[in-house]
Length: 172
Image 1 (cartoon, rainbow, N blue to C red):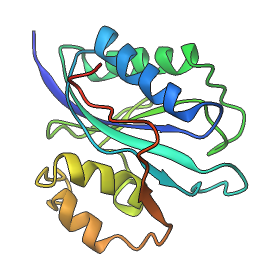
Image 2 (cartoon, rainbow, N blue to C red):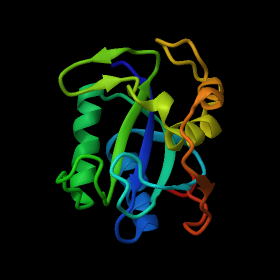
Image 3 (cartoon, rainbow, N blue to C red):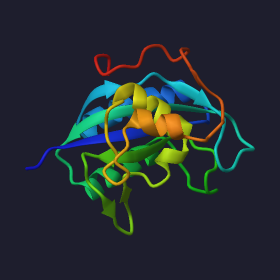
Image 4 (cartoon, helix red, strand yellow):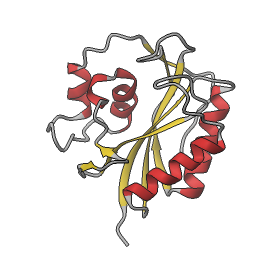
């Protein structure tokens, strides 16, 4: 059975955002694989549809035996358990779990595109990912996370958010 290393991004901007991050980490650890790295939590302005609350975002690294599309299905079930409703594109969310990358795979299916096609344009993705895996190299662009972050033109403010307490893989 193959083992994959996946980099995920958690996002939430509704209700008790810290609780949703804690819920996501615990559920992913129980159902998707072994989390062995988490970034700091960041607070960022909404991207796309901007008339909504600020988001909390956090990246994590997961070892999983699940095939990529199976992993996606499990993550979407976790989102639904957290009350996620897909009513407005880029709209408010109790919980959003994006697969940013899986090893050096390039996947373009109807349900899943990996690496995440917009990651290099979004500071709220790149900053936590660079904290976690600064030298991970994009399999298509050939750039590291740190290089993509340096080149990113997204000027939305991003700041560390410590009010959730330390969320790390040792406490999940």
